[in-house]
Image (cartoon, rainbow, N blue to C red; front, side):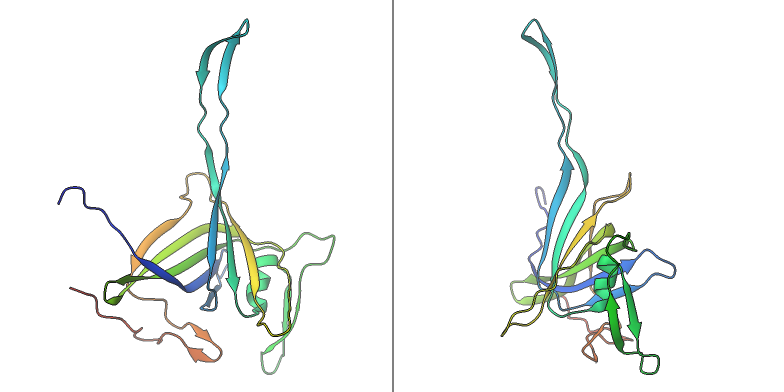
Amino acid sequence: MANEFTQLPLTDVVLVQLVTKEQPPKTLSFQTSDEIKTEEVIKEGEAKELIIKNQLIAKKEVPDLMLGYDLTFKDNVMSPEVMQVAQGGTIEYDPETRKFKKYEPSAIGTKPNLTAFDTIVYSEIVGDDGATGEYAKFTFPNCKGGNVPVNLKDGEYYSNEYKVKSRPAIGQKPYTLEIVDVLPSGVRAFGYDFYEEVEPLKTEKKK
């Protein structure tokens, strides 16, 4: 039918993934983020004007140049591994239990050992009768993090705010949006599986 176009009602930050650009790559998946903000970064074009004897003869507009996006997202628990990807540093684990023991950011006066990564965000697509079983998957490429502040307050749970710069290479898209009907398997938090390893739970689509 003429003039039809896609409209996607989205809700919730269902899942966030950080996929590092190292060999072998590492994927950090977490469901504890509840807010993602993006802000486009552009270099504004300037008008080139030809003025002769104080008279405007011609003017050419130079278009704005898109450089990428600045992302801000919250994680409502402390994760040393996410902090390490975001701002560098080193992590120490207990040699016997392999449990986290110590995290140290990069030393003052040194260049942080930042790793490039892709940021992937899943948001649920809903319909007039609830879940559709589909998700919008946003991928922001070539990201780098920065310093992560630590804030603590009586009576409130800890949360981190991460600021990430996504700066795609020349010729690369600033982000991609695709529709998927299965979330990544093997996502764990607090010792529980969020999604089954073999056959992730699907919600039957509306017909």
